[in-house]
Length: 97
Image 1: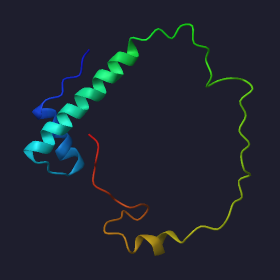
Image 2: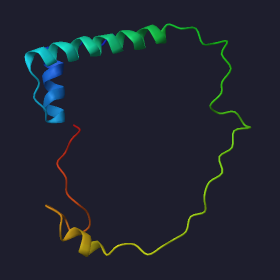
Image 3: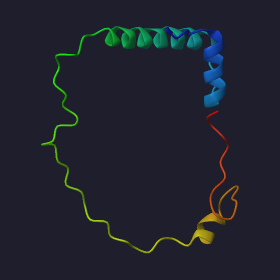
Image 4: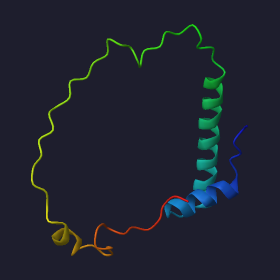
């Protein structure tokens, strides 16, 4: 399914990210997003069946540091400066629907 980049989507993204774009910026963003989507669609047509998988190679190893438990900050002390809190955590505006 091809994603449609149009004025309605750009306006939705503006609202979601709390920004306001000029008409020129909307046009540039629309063109940029169409270009990105076209590039992704081109990549999805590539035949990768003969490409050896690399990410889950069993010889891949990451040395992790040890977890050292240390005292934390006092929660009530931190939350007293929050614009809004529920007693346990910061309360922030919803950003994703």
